[in-house]
Length: 463
Ligand SMILES: NC(=O)NCCC(=O)O
Ligand SMILES: [Zn+2]
Ligand SMILES: [Zn+2]
Image (cartoon, rainbow, N blue to C red; front, side, top):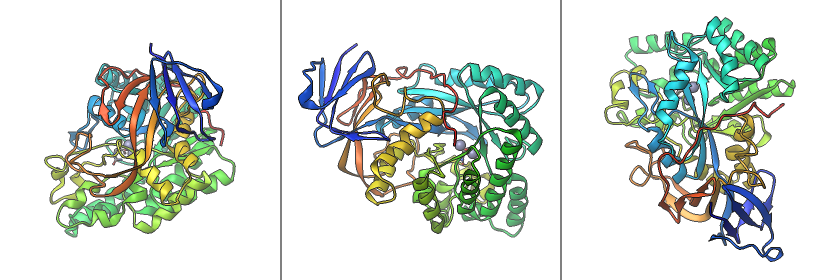
């Protein structure tokens, strides 16, 4: 395998910023050294002068070709992982789904089948448990052995994914004993369904009502509940896609008490708001996801949480549905709009923009987008950093490139951009996955099937 030297750039990791060259051999980083101190030769030299050299992004929350809301997320593993690479992400952790009445293993096998041979970058799986029973609880141990070390449980979506408190407690107890991590979608789905029914009866049918019925208090209540269930079970809890400041407060309080409670937020909650849901006509459907977008004044609590480490990870929850034909299923009834937003290609750039806007610093950018998700989900230091022994998942990032985010130029298989027209500065220029070029000078040179399945270790966070 070719030996590659990346020279002249500023290497930024979660812990350091160093003007060093990086030597890659056998798909791994083998050494870092200042330019004048080494005499390395290589088959390929990448001149990164004036660029950042950063670890490939780790997006720990994607839904490629997920069946949901009567349709299927529009990115396949092939198109979605290719788009991820364009955006500087080199690892995704997607959600396999236990079929109702079926086993965890059936779900895992089905997702392996979807992903195998199609991915441009490496991938792992979490498991969505939609049917917690004696048998699926026992299976959790086997999944942990197979490297599926995290399990998503829902307090939302009654009749689809919702588990009751007893089921969640049991899954947490099992995770407490086998080392797995329970991830929770925390919204009170039963109460939300009552509010949906009442809103529709009042004739409130537009997309903006999606945000109104999914009340922040019902996110906070469910967040509080899963934290307490985790405490009773003696198990860590990871709360996904936190959007409400009241939910951030629940997480922060638990962490202040020393509980092993972790949480992520997503770019859509940091950059978009209920103003988007209220766009004229049916445009707001483009922004329907759950948890929902919140009024813009929630964003400050999210940014603060990211700075203070009450929130550890930024993932995308990439779950794209085309406006035409898919989002349109909810014309005249917001509750039928498939939930989910595209974003796997945009996360690294939006967070870099957050650096420029002064919300976070450069190393925090890399921590939130690369190192912390890798640690949280048992992939570190193979992924998420640039250090001897790490996979050479490396992005040469141009911090000065200006771009306008748009469906006309993005690579996600979806007919709109949630960030249409937004100007951002910074862009992945060249992307290596295990030392193999996937993007070179903004040209795609990767191929479907390069990406391999990543059996993951246990969560590496204590608090
Ligand atoms: N988030 C969302 O709206 N769709 C994907 C499924 C989920 O994460 O709950
Ligand atoms: Zn969810
Ligand atoms: Zn999700």
